[in-house]
Image 1 (spheres, rainbow, N blue to C red):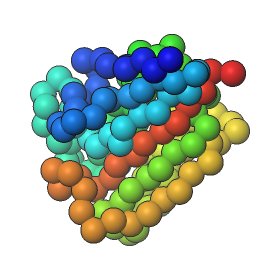
Image 2 (cartoon, rainbow, N blue to C red; image 1 turned 120 degrees about the horizontal axis):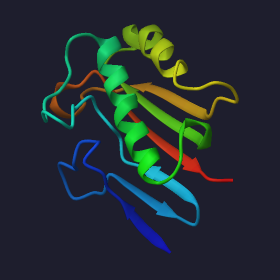
Image 3 (cartoon, rainbow, N blue to C red; image 1 turned 60 degrees about the horizontal axis):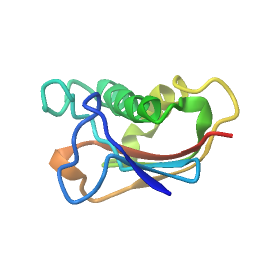
Image 4 (cartoon, rainbow, N blue to C red; image 1 turned 90 degrees about the horizontal axis):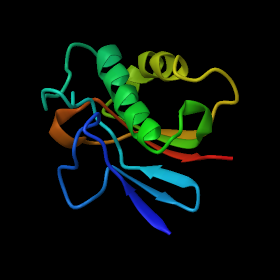
Length: 126
């Protein structure tokens, strides 16, 4: 059975999609950019701060589904520039303690709202 996961602690969808969907114990998140859910504004202080906001948004979705980063099995990272890879990678790694999920990281031509980083996740409660 499919369950839509929604929380005010992460930015609302800006199109015809859900923040996350839970199916048979698997949580599929939509890609998150660095929108602060309290203000609705994109965090643009630095790529480091932008990545922290993305991870906070993802954490809110995981928590709403009764999960945390230890349940994540796959992530996709989309960067405006591969020049930001090291900074994004360091921030991303700080949210996991061991047994990192599978992942791809790709450079894209453009992200919503001029964001520098977008991340999506798949998690499962084992």
